[in-house]
Image 1: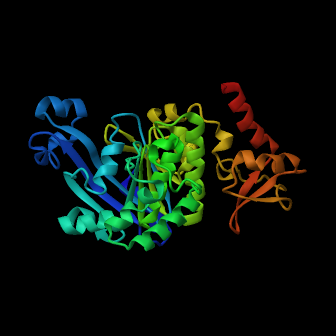
Image 2 (image 1 turned 60 degrees about the vertical axis):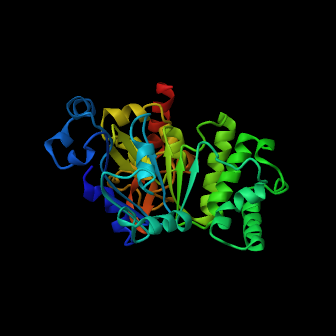
Length: 356
């Protein structure tokens, strides 16, 4: 994928990005700053390690995140995704490149400006909740506001709003060790939201949770996003989590971008065998939209009849299509894209059943 394609979603929407990352590198090791821009930068990870002793964590990564978007970065262990998210706020210092957050150049910020950006613009939610064990839930949630110097009553009032928002009412006076893992992570979410950040960063926050609790927390993130509309960058190694949460997904391997696209893009048009293997077991009817199934009508087809929108998920649209007397017309807003009929729907469903 070209750099133009990487940034095209935001540009097309005529919006300044909430987060813009350009040509970002992180190289670990001796004289790491001498690698970028040389022939050594083109070596594989193993070759570079053998020749220079350096290891590339993030390699020439560029992307934009639109305001209010849930942008998921995924990859296997060692792909560079956690290094990337830490470079965004300079918890790990990038070797080169730029990170611009809400118009502020993070990579050029002074130490005082960087502290201000971290306190007022960014919240992070980690796998390990990092709650203060000696503080009650309400005071854990209010901690970031306390650091900002907000008065006790103001921060208590704000923290109570967050308690109610994440479903922790009646647990305000509890201590972290009195809560389940899922409830502790809700405290982490509430604490992150309390400071009203521009950007929320999630670094595999649900990896340590049991599957049922993990699913509940994924649903909670979706609900909270619908309610508060925050821009989110979510790191995960779990494809199903990425497909469930992401408006767009960036897939990494060995520190590099392999593909960026919507969940349906990733499933319908995998960039290479690496991505194709990732999505091989995904139920396509749960992810693909009618945009990927519709086709031009033959003569006499689709003159009238039902209309569905292009972003309708195949699974959700199946009943309407199968019940129709003829083809269903697919529109993108007011623009006619094509038609789908019961054979188009069944082709996807049958393919799923035969592969399961």
